Image (cartoon, rainbow, N blue to C red; front, side, top):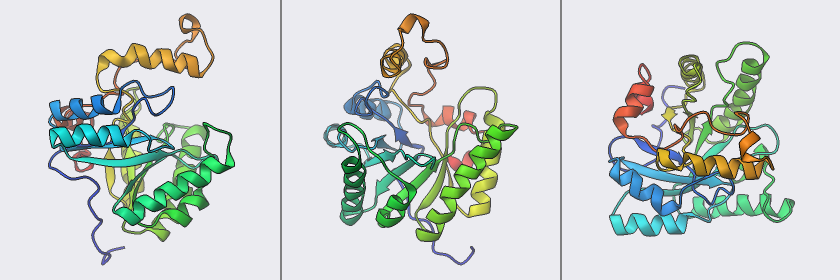
Length: 263
């Protein structure tokens, strides 16, 4: 894979750029408004922010408006969630043509489903992925022992292979810490796969809110999504911590110690 042209940059600005930020436009998942994400990203002195809501670009206008006021580097995108076991993909158009492709892709998924849902499959992205930077998110099971870990690796490679072949300059592997005691193995396995497939490794928090104090709201919307009473929802639904928030570069360097190039 040597001799290929360098990978194009994903986000503007120096320092750590969060590519996995969700807002409340990720219905019943995100717990912060798009503008709040932008304000917090600037306060944390991030190099830039990418908004990637779940199968929608509905929140990017509000984020862009706030970023324009603050003169803060912002990239509009979407988090593509698939119906065929393909891992989630953060999709960021490089230009107007790429934006049109992303919108057509989301329209295809929306037309297949009832209102409020979106059904996407990997071939859809292979057909409409030109002009888009793609960061495949490592599944949570990556690095675990047993069938769960093997299945996560197989799912990831089944996506990386075709995407890397179709868009060799545009594919990355994103990985997020889960603070569950398995992050060292998860990061190590992700780094090994990134080397195997010739894809840059990117760090993300897979953030659902801008600050720790929004965790209670995130728990409330998760309970509503799962039709469970909040008092009895348990850890299968509620978060065990408030770590899925925006973080500054120093904290990310600590979490990705040994894997600093991903920052």
